[in-house]
Image 1: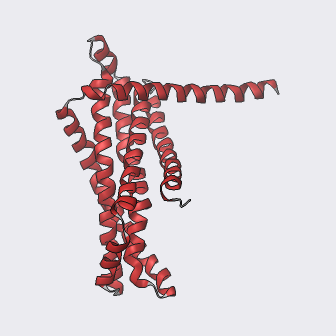
Image 2 (image 1 turned 135 degrees about the vertical axis):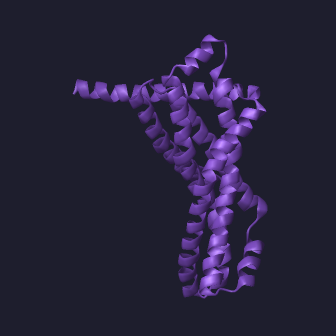
Image 3 (image 1 turned 90 degrees about the vertical axis):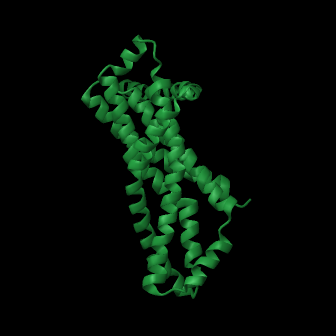
Length: 258
């Protein structure tokens, strides 16, 4: 019994120790953002954002296809198929756009960041920078964090826009819903601040969370192939859970009517 309680206590202590290290790391990284170079930020935006664009756009298109198809069959039961555009737009802009884009981004760019920084740790490149008086957080991590901060809301917007076009193709082009009603009701129902603005805030928060988690696991990875592999896996799992948890909290805060 004592051994069991000791093991549980050890796990709890390790979890809180890890959370403390993450908090210290996040504070140190954010305090060094001002020293990031513009050329490095642009390079990382191209590497992180542009290379994630294809999977984001294709996924958004097929999500739009499914929303248009399933939404029509649900709405036609109540004689409200003209509201298909409203349903698709609100679903994508409020929830699916930021959340699914963040999950895909964590799987694509988050793992790439963790693996890249972890390999630099394993190859002692970060230690070499410190020996030469170069701050690796300011030189390596800060540009990548800012690039994720900029790229994530843009990718989420592209996901939502492509998804709406996919739903229009299915609902109007294939099924035959009225084109004017699809767009006019969407324009009248979607608010630029309460819907699009809150969705953008969500995507920014998700981007910050994914960036901090990915860079932390890469920076603190054990300098072995197995350590880098575990860090990459942890990035995907923890980032996905964090995105879903933050989505619930922010949705309850933004859209709950008191």
